[in-house]
Picture 1: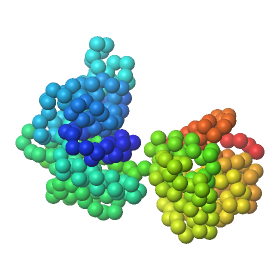
Picture 2: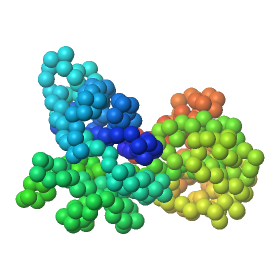
Picture 3: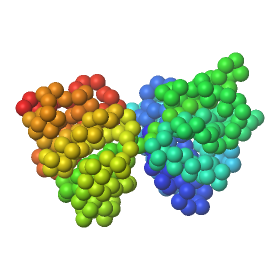
Length: 344
């Protein structure tokens, strides 16, 4: 669900006429699944993607020719035909794809701005959206992890909230005997990656991690290096020695941590309080032998990864950043299969 974060950065940036396109149902195979989103301006510029290019071109052409009115509409793309001249062939699409097209009204802009603030604070958001028909307008609401409801509060949608689990799959669902269809989407906050260290080798890691959907923050006692000019892709900076940082920082079970200070004593001080936290991931730069000395034990906790990164023979800051971010992605999605690591 990286698309939503990119779209939220642009949806309120200007007053141009815009449309939001969302894949709400897939029957069969598709390049992207339910939840993929694309923002299209009237002039044809777009943010996000729905396919390998076939759906985008058609939707943009329809928007440029003013085929959509002031109400949301559904377009069904049947990609099952074998004729290679049709869209879908050679792009991984071989199913029926339902795309909801919504004009971005001022009200929707305001609601999305509120949703962005919640996601930026690390709160996940559940979206409930009534699939429109010819007889009714489309109601929708966003339900935040903090318990707030944002949007057009159709009463029957509000009544659904207790029955939608936090881990419910994104897609369209039929509700009871009424036959009403509701699109449910899990809008996930970007996972926080907190990097301790502000040396030059941190720069490619920050850039790459931010590009693949992490909210990157940096903590260091090196005030001369730990700032936006050095790390433009980082969202927040903490200045202080480990004992000072412990008082500044709060943590959650979703947090990813990297120790990249190149200072044994500081790493040891940081680990003294980090190992007591319930964290998703703690990656430590350096060999296993060094990490054993840092922890003062032979066996690591399950959430400690050392040496940090997948073992791909990486050399130099750029390649090491690739190996680290690959491991972060693996852990984010909790893929099966442990990373291959050094033995010593």
